[in-house]
Image (cartoon, rainbow, N blue to C red):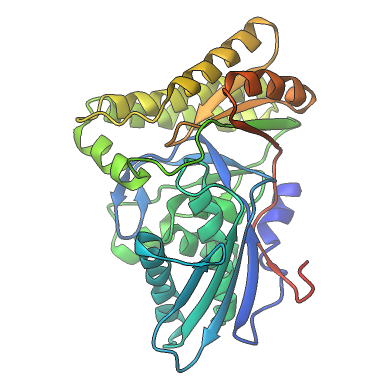
Length: 351
């Protein structure tokens, strides 16, 4: 029931009748990873993925149509967007305008509370919030599934941040005609039994990555001899993960998530040249997770395309795990997250 409520949260929000809308979305961390694309333009992934939406690090985005303007104005954290960040947002707005049959430019103001480009899913929350706000501001009448497809065009993982708690993103049909392929790839909530999980996030380096996720994906898919075997095994991991979630088996969820993530990083290390996101601090945190398990604490690690480590554990153990990880993180920040809400529009009073 909770997942169903999160799925409809976007739909029950007020529609954008004034040409202005504000939305908030949270990042998600993939437990079965998204790594590699079959279609760069439509952002169709090589495999299905599954994630947990967090209750921390929200992104709040306001979109206001600006009739008569000759360009979009985009600010990120109070500063004008530049370079690739600006290009991606303007390209996404062009897609929204095409669907809305509008030529109006827009003023976009985004406040992101998660470090950008550090493997902490900032693009997921960012483009999910942008998709919801822009669709409303331009008067598009889209349900949650359609909004998920739209968000995917900005950032693949953003399709999952439309929904709360546990979410699966269907890779879809890559061999179908373009319109059918586009429609076939979307995210939706996944039923889960009683888990009460927490995710301890160890930020060992909040700076931007030397190699972007997009570039690393291309290199891995094109050159790593380990990629195809991992992609095949990831399908089995997804099936096992859905079963574990359904029966509320947090230990199995953690085991599957850890093996899937470490396998993904192995594909990157085998790329030519190698892509290595793990740092010495990352390895120290991973070692601390192994020691926690030896001490009888349910704790399993996952990592996205970056050096930062997330540790899945029981909510009751979160403070203990955070304390151990904080020491291992060598001065890095540590945060505790729980399953969070789906993306939503905010009303005039900010709720």
